[in-house]
Length: 380
Length: 115
Image (cartoon, rainbow over all chains, first blue to last red; front, side, top):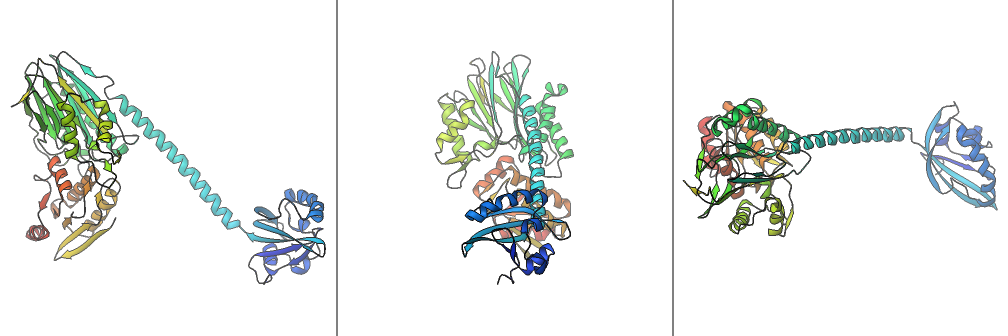
């Protein structure tokens, strides 16, 4: 059986002299059985760096049957007859025969295995390095993205605005912003690019650029939105990417709010008389060419508006369902009706209202705008 | 992603066999659909009856399919459930962008007229 083994089997006595050498050992090391038997194994096979240590430990083995390689499996390099070094896996066991210790070793060529392992290790290292670099890039993108969002809440005599931006990953496709307009008014926006991550963040940067473009500040909303739609059609229009947005011009002087909702989830509007959904007025952007006329809400009392992205209601609950738009609307109407909506607390409010929520998987963005008593609102 | 396909005349019926069409499987779905189109299947009806939830990535994959077919053929949808229907109506894609049918019969009738 030992002679038929595919692994090299070698037996030595207490002095380290070979007294068994099977055909597989012949094939592996190039020494015939006749050449190997009777010779010191360590002189024969040990690499220069292992030879000294092995010979040093032999007296202890002869006395006790113990040694650093006994009852272990480890890898080392062995020297073949032609002087080349081969990587082998060596397992050694000791046994006592007629009061003298012997050791039997099983040796297997692991040259290919070692090469594969090294190649895998190298690939893993490269993958880790690539992942680290990608994470750094995304972190840098995320930092930039957060830095261009309004850092402070907006407050004027007539209107206040406060935003929340909570990306699900390092870069996000969500966006909120506001710009003061003459007369104490405010232009504000909440937008969401399809997908997640760097691609969505890149598309969203186009939205911000057009929102902040000086030429656009005094242009009607419809001009800006149609311009953005054309840009998106030209750049990403063939690939299925899109942007949804809700944009508003709040003008206390005119006592009205102009808005466009391009395929975005409905905003919520509350005034002293009612609670209303601000539904889409046109399709999402980047899909079809078309007009985006604005709609108007009249202001004549205390009012508030919540704009947000779909991550708030698309969160998954424990049984696999989603929290859902209807539940979210019910929650927001309740908070707004009691006058206690705090945009910073909104994710916690959602989590608390559905005990089974597993977690938010999408970016979360919200913008809460409130009008002073001088302005107020009712639907036209 | 598993998609059940069969032919009804010259029309291809594709039914994604997943409960969700979202960021996790939308790229695979899009890739399958593009392959069908490259194989010259330009009249496609997608049965969404198994899909209980779709996010913006799923919607993007459907839009990409629609745009890849372009004017060379036709894409229709049917089997749209409540949640997915809500997404189409919120985004207004049910008004002149996607052709959404009540059932397979109606979807195929529309495709056959275009073939």
